[in-house]
Amino acid sequence: MAVVCALAAACAACASNGGDTTQRPTVSSEPVTLELPDAVGIDGAPTTPLTRLETATVYLDSPDWTAQLGTSLWVRLDSGHVVRVDPRSAEVLADVKPRGSSQFAACQAFGVSTDAVWACGKALVQRIDPATNRVVQTFELDVSHLQGHAAFSDDKMWLLAADGRSLLPIDTTTSEVGTPLPLDVPCTDLAGSGETVWTVCPWDNQVLAVDVTSGSVTYRLGLAGAAGIALGDHLWVASAAGLVQLDPDDQSVEAVYDLGAVKALDVAEGAHATWVRTGWNRTEPGPTFLVGIDPVAHQVTSVVTAPKISSGGTTQEIDGQIWTSAYDDGRLVRLDIPGS
Image 1 (tube, rainbow, N blue to C red):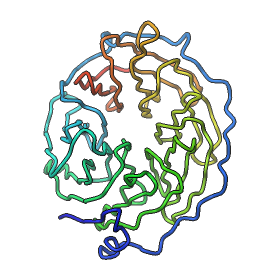
Image 2 (cartoon, rainbow, N blue to C red):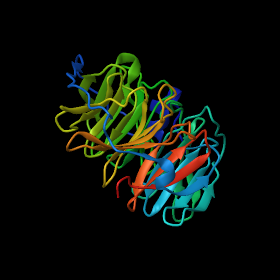
Image 3 (cartoon, rainbow, N blue to C red):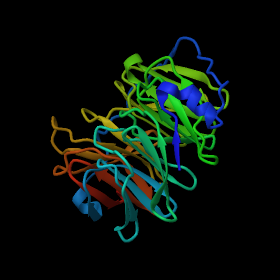
Image 4 (tube, rainbow, N blue to C red):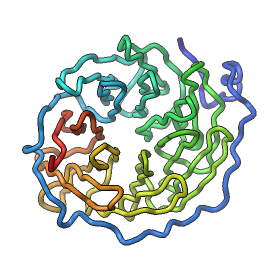
């Protein structure tokens, strides 16, 4: 079933689909500039080569964004295909081909709700049923090609519009596309939990918290170079100062981590540590591949190096092992927890 709600005609189209046309955000005032403590570095942390930890490799065509749903690992490829992997056997269980147009330059947003996998392509968002490994719904939406995560919050999947200036909701129960929530600055990625969606807006050096039930921007934090974002028990924001760890409840800064010249590309909280997937550091020996952080002690606990893998990717901890992608290297890697 296709649900059409193009951004240019959002109000009319969404109203015809039963969306709420009265919801409008109340934007908070000037951003609160965060005061950052001295950064925690990686010097002295135990370092292990990936070759000593690697337990499986799956070769795929440009694997990038990853997510876990049920007992499976789901991986979005740059082609728009979504691959399902068994984390225990490292076998590919399904290759879900997208319907319609999907290409490298299109939206990369990827995420899961309670019972579905969501992936977007060129001006579309598709819902995949894990029971059948098939695309069961296509939503025609003009979505941002800069977004990497589709955020699940308040029983809705949230995406950014093409210009990054509004949030687009899809009700996962009714399949209705709701009214976009306008933002007054362009943003690039999302993280969601409960009734809040967080978004980073690097051109305006801001991090926004949006209450999606009222449509209001409840917090506006000033952070230079805010780019990547992830949310678990803590809020993680990659910034010019390093990787910033925040308390999502009161927005206090808990720690900042300096990973050297390596830019943090992805952050995932696991049972054993918070894992930070990095790209290749071309300016220093021993390219950093993965960093483990103790978010309570605020310490870097492990560093994994991989000189032969040059690209970044995303990370999941599943059943006591780490899965991480390396898109330009065409591989999905499983490794043991460092030090275990």
